[in-house]
Image (cartoon, rainbow, N blue to C red; front, side):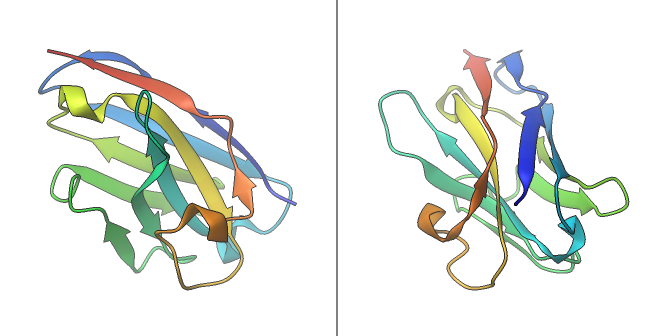
Length: 124
């Protein structure tokens, strides 16, 4: 079992930046594939980014490519999401998630572990 706790959300103006953190505990974080998802108001949860267990491979949704960066520090059991050039349409609850096996990293149903979410609001 993995417990995940997100932090770093808040209110920011369009064009600004935020860095989300997700602290993991409970098992070997260094063997867990990690992802970030978001749920905009009134919409379904969708994929943002993923990173493999050692941080050597990443994947991004087209909507955030070039603006967001996922990274991890296995020594600190933490995964990050650096968000730059934020837009009002980035407003959502952001979730980190973990999975034990590769494949299908864009699909939330393949992740076994979820945080409680953190709100990000981008004002225009």
